[in-house]
Length: 250
Image 1 (tube, one colour):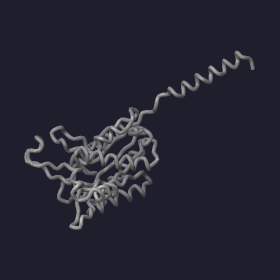
Image 2 (cartoon, one colour):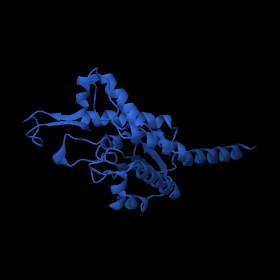
Image 3 (tube, one colour):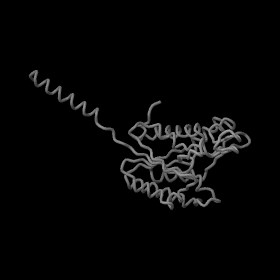
Image 4 (tube, one colour):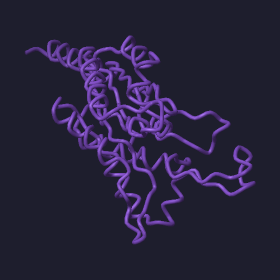
């Protein structure tokens, strides 16, 4: 091979390499659907923070997070209000849908209450319609409430409805993040007193948004939301999905 041909092939090879390195990274969109523990909060509600808020900041610029979670919603009300349809109308192949309900489904005194069978059917709808659009549904068990017994052991908040989520994920062979289980582990590690640091708890006069104070064992402050988001991210990495490769290393 002549020197000229060697140079020509070397130039071609270099161009191919440069093109490969400069190829645009495929964009990924992540939808979050769920309740108040995940949702974006009004400024008037700060420091209450949904875990979906810090979660959105842990990815590189190729990932956009669309947080559709809403306070007080159940699998049923999210559908009847047309919120789920607005997601499916936008879904594209390759998108991800994180689905976390249960807090409002399981409370019989709320209008959002859904029976166990309805809850299962609704979750199956979320999964099947996500798959139909070519998206990746990820079911998430409802995050634990802060509740301890007299011996300092964390109590189960969502035993029945979390198990339904686990069973639907197994039956439909879709990804599961067991946030109920993992958040209970975190609460137990922190203990009865230190776990208060995760939640929206304020004394009277401590914050202008809550002049009378607040004692909330369900909703998080900024620190608690970040810790819960970190649990979700850790479990996401274990699922071996492409989305996990877009998590920014900190």
